[in-house]
Figure 1 (cartoon, rainbow, N blue to C red):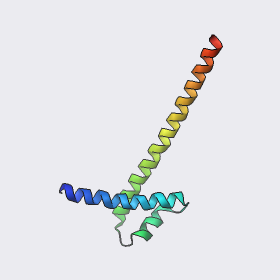
Figure 2: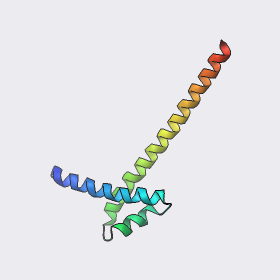
Figure 3: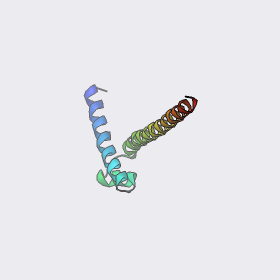
Figure 4: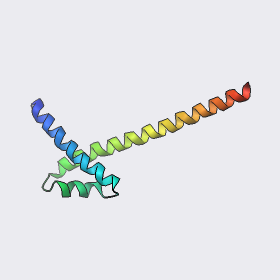
Amino acid sequence: MSEARNDIRRQVVAQIIGVMEKAEAAGKDVWEAAEAAFPGTPIGVITDAWLDFDSASEERWWQSLEKTIEGEIIRNAIAKAGGAA
């Protein structure tokens, strides 16, 4: 498959993900929103978009958790260092 065709496919998936993100922010079902916005889209395409959407959400969750843990470790280290002084 040519690079141009791959790029078009990535752009299509990105559009679907954009609809999913807006739906999530509005508290709506992301899958239903994608199907409603792009009727007739094959389920495999919606699935690919949802997998990318879900992976991005999971990555954001992990980053948030890691920042929380790092912050807690730093706070604890500062507290210990302050008590040792």
